[in-house]
Length: 139
Length: 424
Image (cartoon, rainbow over all chains, first blue to last red):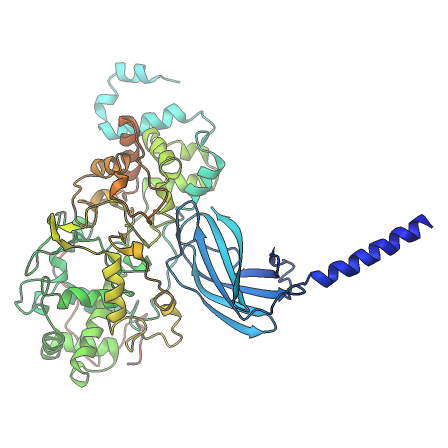
């Protein structure tokens, strides 16, 4: 009886959770899963080409984005990167194109120095901007 | 094992040069140490990132005669040809002198007039992303055209260059062999571009050799501690500063010891100390690049895919670009003085002192955040210089003969084995 009640409660909790969450559609490549970031409104998965990023070489970021329940659908995405300790970003601007279904491709990135780089993803929707960041360290 | 004092007592040192003694003693002293104990794993990783040397290279897709033997030959001839200048008194070789590591050994040089910047070396130029100290060119061939038309340098123009190449039978023949079209059938501007492209093909052949640092780095890579122990002790200490607390290798990255980009390091921007004459560095370089019809976005890029133009397409001007200059490669750095964009520092000691006593008030407020005075001791400064000197190749830059052994050009001469053929 006790076990059955717990199972029911777990089921209800899971059902409620799936209402709020979403899963960005960016399948694993060669068994390697994409990196993921969550904000209050959106979930984002990304990976780079090439992987890992090579210092001083241009690379591409592929990303998938989904809006959590109640959040406005993304209208556009901006991708940039910054070195907080160095107080500067990249010397190159990215160009982001959408291929539909919440998928985007950012071209033109280059990390020209070793150290900590912070990816910046800005999601524009319904007149507001949601900023999502994550860091990588290049040796 | 015979000790150092005993060796000296028997006068062995007197038979050797001071340099050989220093190197030999360093090897003996450390032969029994476990090789690389003074470096952390992170430092070793950074050291390994500075090789291997030489780097891989593929011909420049934006230049259809890159790596073409005919182009290299013609490019070398034109590089040293003073008749390209209107006054027939200056060539590219006037300032880029082989025996001086393809620079000139002076603070600033003079063509028709004094220029504003120090002459950069042409060594390893094929591995660069941007060209000139302000990056005003995005290809070696377009950079090669700029001094030809600069009024302070060759002070020439497309018409003069094209007419000269057309009228000289041997040059005209070599041009046709290279491009498959006679220069008489091309307009002046196209011939000038062709001259830039053959000169680039020649400069792509100018490469530095292996250095004592490479020997050390490669020994580390293969775990050969005995070979690694031959690297002089002062250079090791200097290397540890370079990849460690000095953070030098944060900008002087990779096998070329440069990230190929631009930074402000507090060197004065005023030309001749005149506050009305300011060198804007990268800021002005980007403006010139984007205004040039010879950039990689223009019609003279031979790369149909335009992949070579990615850097130019995505280039992002920033406020901090003002006063930034290109991070120089440190390979053969001992042969490239005077130093800095304006040649104001005569020796590597001066350069190290600059970073040791860096005046942060001279830096951009939005510039590189990790630049701080290193506050090196006298010994640390000497060690850093000792390390930098191990980035010189073992032999001095080669003396270059002025005579050409090649036979006169004949247009219907059968192509030699290995000659590439390119459609015009």
